[in-house]
Amino acid sequence: MLSDSRVSLQDVSFTYEEAPSPALSEISAAIRPGEFVAVLGHNGSGKSTLAKLVNALYIPSKGNVVVCGYDTRDEKLVWEIRRRAGMIFQNPDNQIVATVVKEDVAFGLENLGVPTEEMIPRIEQALSVVRMTKYMDSAPHTLSGGQKQRVAIAGILAMEPSVIIADEATAMLDPSGRKEVLETVRMLNQTKGITVLWITHFMEEAAQADRVLVITDGKIELEGTPAEVFDHVEKMKEMHLDVPHMTSLADELRKEGMPLPKGILTVEDMAREVEKVLCPSKSAT
Image (tube, rainbow, N blue to C red):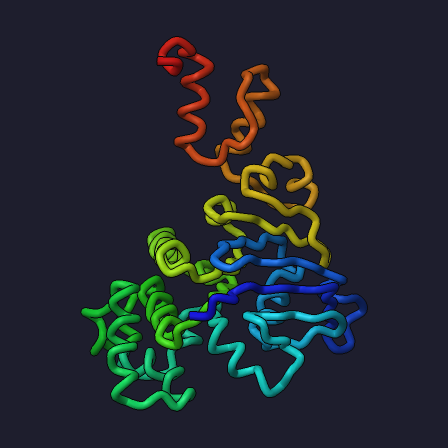
């Protein structure tokens, strides 16, 4: 894995053909090596366009996108960029290309011309990491949505990426599938230092990120830690976005006079802070 696993966007704009206005307009952002960054935005805000620019599926109309030290404008570097920055798409069925799981994981390696004797241990290791080894010889169509996404992640891992881009990778999954896919990617981020760009419309997923970017009308409107971003409850509502349930509840309780601090994201946060208010002597011991 490259030590330079950063992603940089410098005054990036992108306009679709015949579109009346840019999908993204003069966006600048830097994602540090090993960082887990969530991107939020309503439908049509530009967040999926951002993901495709980082994966070199799109080339910016203006500005530059640099991934792992490579400028996406250089056509000779496109496959090198995609090897180092793997992408998980929304529909797991659209990513399955083989009739057997291990062959699907091998697909990217075959395109890279990796020798068979090197491919086998990389496939086995990748499936082991996402806990799918026992399904190695299974037909992908027999798997659940969450399992299919984990196979897709294994295919990316086998290519030894520095960056994972997830474009609403949990949007078509049930709650169980969403949980297992997010946990898998978060584990890879924490144990292997893989940089993650996580496009989502689930606020509870974004709450687990290191940093959150909020895009609306092609521009970055908010940026910061989850606690910092979600504390802008009214501004998020103005952008037609939610905040985590506990953040919203805390905001309502503060309006009713309960002295709760900002930065509440989870049930655990809420329970701890309410206990401090109701039982100050107990929380002090």
